[in-house]
Amino acid sequence: MPGPLRKLLVANRGEIAVRVIRAARELGIATVSVYSDADADSLAVRLANEAMPIGPARAAKSYLDASAILGAAARSGADAIHPGYGFLSENAAFAQAVEAAGLVFVGPTPETIRLMGNKSLARDTAQKAGVPTVPGSVGVVDTVDQAGAVAASIGYPVMIKAAAGGGGRGIRVAATEAELVQQMALAQTEARAAFGDGSVYLERFIRRARHVEVQVLGDGTDVIHCYERECSLQRRRQKILEEAPSPALTADLRERLCTSAVSLARSVRYRSAGTLEYLYDDESHEFFFIEMNTRIQVEHPLTEMITGVDLVREMIQIAGGKPLRLKQSDIAIRGAAIECRINAEDPAKDFFPSPGKVTAITLPGGPGVRVDSMLFAGYTIPPYYDSLLAKLVVHAEDRPAAIARMKRALGELRIEGPKTTRDLHLALMNEPQFRAAEFDTNWLEAWLGQRSG
Image (tube, rainbow, N blue to C red; front, top):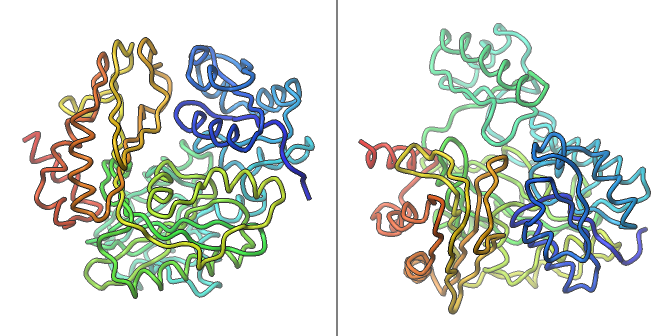
């Protein structure tokens, strides 16, 4: 059992690196920031106790280079590594290498990452735990004939999904047998290129689906949930805006959904923070488990705002060997929260990336407003990484009040230099269907198409 952590290396960049450094500092833990050549002047580097270079700007040569990160940990004397999200955060081999080096991995065990990181295996695990899953294939399908037989049994349309997938890649929809032949080949090729694994499986396609996810915390023995988040507003399967709790769920549905998430996490003896993602069928009022993210999520601040639980702090303490300090009875929903992802993209030009220098910045404040960001005046946004600049999060007594607060906060936000998605979020706050919570996972793209048309 590991003891209290003394020095934590943050194997990430941007706003999540800043977030982890701040949590560690409050716990009295020294921090090490690793950085690529493009991030030498980043806020994470400025805030950490130490900073160590790990390679060129390209992520493959720096943030995805496990040996470079482990080397930095050895040189700095760090006794633990927090992977943040993205990059190596759900890489079982990296987690194993961290433990083999005698360090603490702030996250689940390598075995859990391996099991739950494969969508097909995770689906089978969920079924064994009695958690509902979308009707589909039992494991992966290798041939078109196998896929056709599954599709015939569950009915068209079907989704073809990469077993090792993530981030919306390796997913195709087929409405007929002819489309299945074509789309399966494309999905396998895309999956092989993106993940090095062309395995795919099939699921029933839900026409009016909402994306709802449940936050869990576990210590390897006990597991609790911190309720759910609504993540249906997506563009090309990438989340744009999230909120908590989900406005679609009744109290009974919420209880059943969160209980199922705890059952599944307990069945794998989950340790650390994790998120179980579900599709909620707006027509049948059923929910189905689709995958688990064995890491902290981008949108974790929503849960922190409505429950008062510091998830990153809990992750670090659990990794240091402490049992869960919270019981399920300690967790309650207080009010509503909304998160807008402020990206360096130009919505008027099909979300074209907009890196470059931030010449001036004004961040909003006041009651119930939080900004997680790595920005400062004079910072140059590199073109090599994700376009996320800031997460603007608000909390209020209910959803209408949270929308009003977000409108006010967005109005105060000023980022001069790059193009951003701020005005898009302002438009969403005024959209009647958003305000009425009448949307699904396809709604945002249709809305964007109407605006551009």
